[in-house]
Image 1: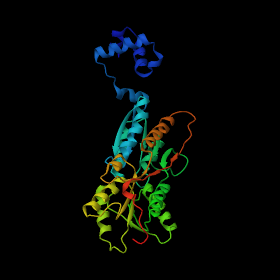
Image 2: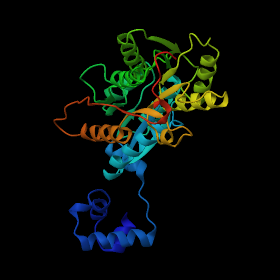
Image 3: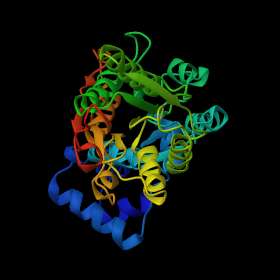
Image 4: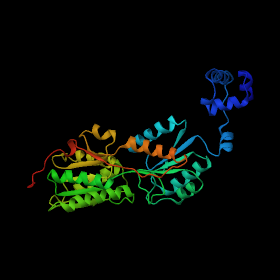
Length: 334
């Protein structure tokens, strides 16, 4: 910094202001400093700055499964807000494993991140509370908070499950499956609850719950094989899937076995990722505002550093997007 100051003919303090508070420096002086930085190839010592400031210019985003495009879209929303604030994003993937989540949170704490956005594993990790106790802002993303003392951004997944099941009932289906029932994630449990409520309210309807090992495309294939193996008189004629990856896997397996979708079997996914509309049979899905979830959570995180911040827990409403995979109306006699 002394070399930059000498080249630009300013004080070291002015160089610091250009780097940290550029709005306090006149345009001419700021440009001289920036030119000197470029000429000398100067790169600030971020580690030293972190020691002085007590935090870094980074935000941690911890997600359950980066292979799921839902989280990619959420991350884009987060990144927009974070970058506009002059910060950088560190993306961490837990694979829905508590030990990986703890390891990532430990590293983020060591890095003195500005804050953490997290879609937690099934049970809230004690390490999250420990971060907050150290003064690190934490916002739950795609997850409701247990109380009003923490910011969280979520979607009404009970409503989403209900919308999907009511649509299938309206299309004439009475034997409906929910695929993803084993999951301990509160989001999936809420979707299951919404589906179950809608099926219970439809006279003559019954619900079959399938629990594949993973909430992935492979899990969807597994569930489809199990449905195909059920005797025709008891076999579900439609399914609500806990996410679109399961629904896409189910669609693939049904087609592979010669089961016509939606004539013989209807499928509704959840999340409405981009691939849902691009499937061989365009997939009906419950749309969550993925991008806006990320943006809103990031805004709340940045706001926590301000005086007078009040914790908020906004809940977005999902929307059912109907496509070909559930379009056919089933006759009662079938």
